[in-house]
Image (cartoon, rainbow, N blue to C red; front, top):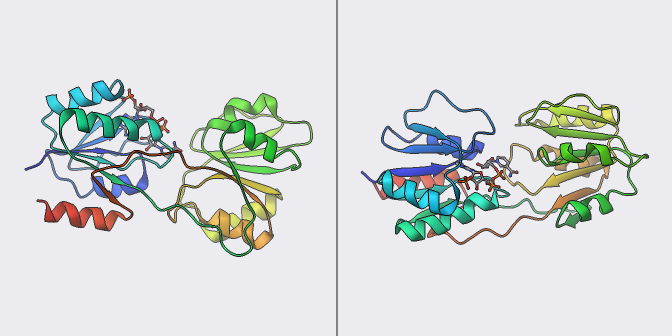
Length: 240
Ligand code: NAP
């Protein structure tokens, strides 16, 4: 049996982990929920950079690394590619396809936080769906703005922001109700791809709202890349 190290932290990774039997390892950074109903081993926490990951691969006799981390988790993907090369084991990656703008979309692409706040300057009620990063900037909210920040983390209340500690998937009906109740005038998003959090883009289009979209980071090439979980699982069965 080829012992697999699956790097996860996403819904797609969890779907793969559910198919792995004992003897394989599912690895999480430790920021979110840790599943307790898997047949495979679950480990939590960083490895100590690419060198630590290479050591782990060797010590644990891992024969295949699968990078199924989030498309914006660029550090662990870089580490996975480098460590696999160093340990001479193949690295496969699940690379979820990006969302593509459709007719009627008004996407404004930005590369970092400074560009992002510049793109928001003329708006009053942004919805942030970027994860926890905006929580570090609550004291910088411009006087004309009220922020809604939706992320996994609970956070103390703030007079100029509403923090929604919520986990997807989000439905079209739910997003319509939220957008209507909160009167957002712009959406801030990563281009995560997949269906779990896509409804906000549909509702932004329906309401004619711009989307400030953070560009995807560069990710390293992997030995095999898959856009869909089913294709990766098929390849695992074929390769035994
Ligand atoms: P990151 O910047 O790429 O990684 C930071 C460090 O966290 C890595 O260097 C590694 O520490 C550790 N790490 C990350 N993923 C790990 C894993 N699966 N197993 C063990 N250690 C891991 O990652 P991030 O953007 O902070 O994301 C952290 C985790 O949340 C990822 O697993 C990702 O899949 C998940 N996630 C991220 C996003 C996002 O938008 N970034 C969204 C949803 C889920 P060492 O260097 O010490 O090994």
